[in-house]
Length: 82
Image 1 (cartoon, one colour):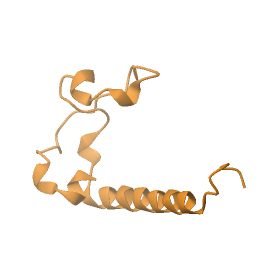
Image 2 (cartoon, helix red, strand yellow):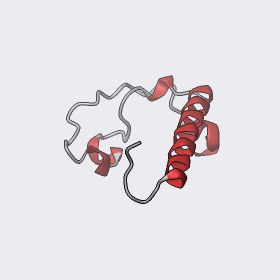
Image 3 (tube, helix red, strand yellow):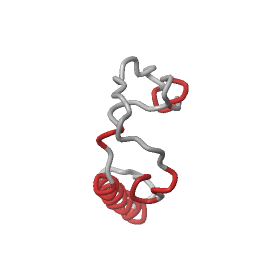
């Protein structure tokens, strides 16, 4: 998404090597930043990143966030069911 939102923040990434996901530090995988997990500071295949993929990811994220917020607004204060 950064290539789409703020491309000036992205360093040359086209020739970087793929870094396998490996050990995900389960169950706390979301608490780790990539610099703590890999020497180059990335995971996966950054050379495959594109502005178009970033736009798609952002659009999907925004749509899901909108749907969640609409659900919160409809909440009756008792249960998320129904």
